Figure 1 (tube, rainbow, N blue to C red):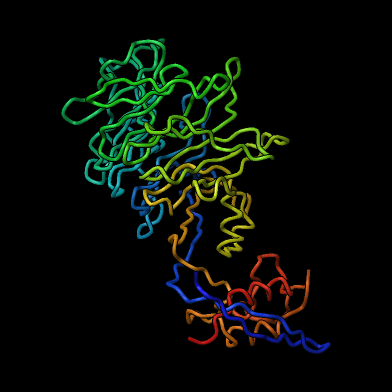
Figure 2 (figure 1 turned 180 degrees about the horizontal axis):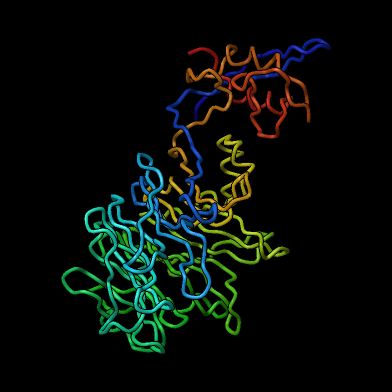
Length: 445
């Protein structure tokens, strides 16, 4: 156990001195958490949505409005997007004759994007697509003819294997497919023609595919073919929206009761443990996992409030800390006070290491916007009180904030931002902020 030494620090106030103990903590390598809105395409609504992030956390895929919607057969106005730090937001266009498209997944290096797009020959149908910088958006077709619909839901790490759902004709049943350049679109071997099925996710190497057959979750591999993994338990018998970890070991999803259509509980499944239910927070009526890290240790998703069904909250889960509200984590644990002005809404995906998370919320201007949060590594320490950025919290950091101390609900006046140590993000500087400063105090190093 690391021994902690204490020293006394003083806080000057107009009424005199207050003496308080200060904990000394060892200095360790720092990493900066970040949060940013990803913007939107020009034209149309001010709105963007993130659906997926590359395994390395570098690139994001989703959709944004680039045109104003038109009635009847006109475009609905949304367009698939790719976002990266070095390029910003990029519209990916659509299939010939139609501009509407939406991206649902992105390959490891961010160079392949998949999703769905309206098809020129039938305004009510969509076609699965594969997009690259070189080829642009390519229609993956349907099973056997030009009549039908398809959606690409997920892509392998190398971008060469794509899964989703497709149906033939107008009244056909949706069925899970796997696509490669060599084979084209094919039914999953061993998958029955009914009930309806969908392949919703794929492992990084493309060898494990998961989805739902009717209301039952399945796992499919080339060697074992179709494996139904059964109901969660006697009550939660129906599964939906299942995802798989990059290594193929862990499946997450949500389940609902027979006779209802509302998911109530989230689950995590492994071959070793079977189904493990995620806890249902006291305020929530639903837990909806959306994605899982490469090794299955981190799950992200959203909850739906019990008293307000329109209120959703993003969560992150791991075995050590359980379910935590991502907004609370960003503000209270990492001091990203700018997040307080956002409604973070839906979380959709997480990077392989579980540290980069994307979702869609409402920004401070009241517009829908995709966002990206990056969390520091598990051994990083975030020192909110290190105002001069020298890697420690000492009296140099304390001198200016001390002069700006005004008490609860009193924002400092005439204090530069770098001297305002609002460590608890409540828009004032008081003894609660100083208490956190004390805990972080390292002294000069």
